[in-house]
Image (cartoon, rainbow, N blue to C red):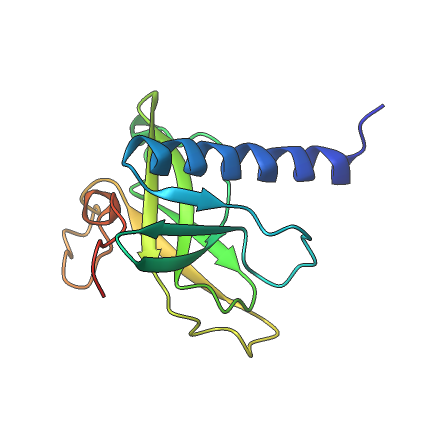
Amino acid sequence: MTTVHGKRLRLGKLGELQVAINLLEKDWDVYFPFIDDGGGIDLIAIKNNIIWTLQVKNQLYIHKNRGRTSKEFRYGGTPADFLVFPMVIDDTLHIIYYPHFGKSKDSKDGSTIAISFSEPKNKQIIGINWWEDFLHLPEER
């Protein structure tokens, strides 16, 4: 019998594998830390001497037609360069690479990031994190 904790671990590993496949398809080398000690790094991506550390936050499916215009992701302190969110939007998997650069590594409470997938009802669009803007890891620093 799988516990709630076990289901969460499986969902997390599924997200990490989805991100690894996405990066491998884009010719990145992908490495998994040998020990997952909760240190905030799930994957390491390397391409052309560029090295990025990644924290993957897996979420369930997101449907634009349900009246929501964005999805909020909570995360704890992490030294990772990028927070990565596998998102299924309108039945298509997208991997969101949000630049973080360890901003929350000393935070105990973490923070929240909102990723938008359609225009908000109040029509405010300044300062919005559009999902289409975060589909690739930068290949240079």
